[in-house]
Amino acid sequence: MNSNKNYGLYAIALAIALVGALALGVPIGTLAVLLVVFACPLMMFFMMRGMHGGDEMHGHDDMAEKRDAHNHKPFR
Image 1: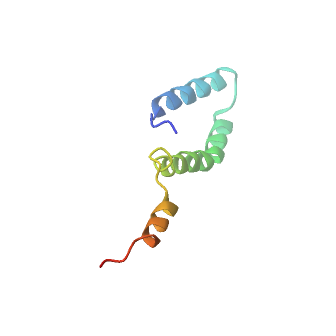
Image 2 (image 1 turned 60 degrees about the vertical axis):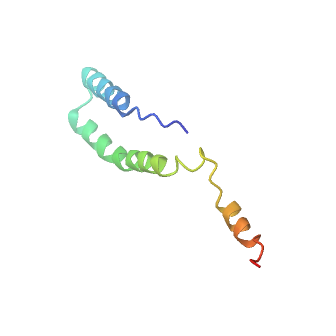
Image 3 (image 1 turned 90 degrees about the horizontal axis):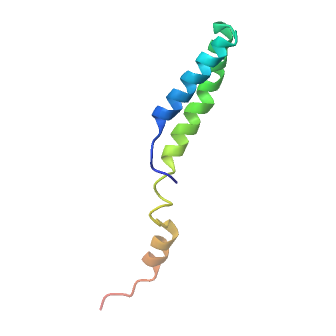
């Protein structure tokens, strides 16, 4: 997973889309409703993307740790 956070580019793209929609004559009330409708899925997308990003890249394996814990030799 890419660790670069390009939130600035997302904000610029959103601003361009809003200005373009207003230039085409879309009412502000319609844009506000669309913003509210898409706010929850977008927040979940960005939050869940950030949660699961680190473990796959570093080769972290929970099952390997459990296997190693059971394969120890007794101390003599």
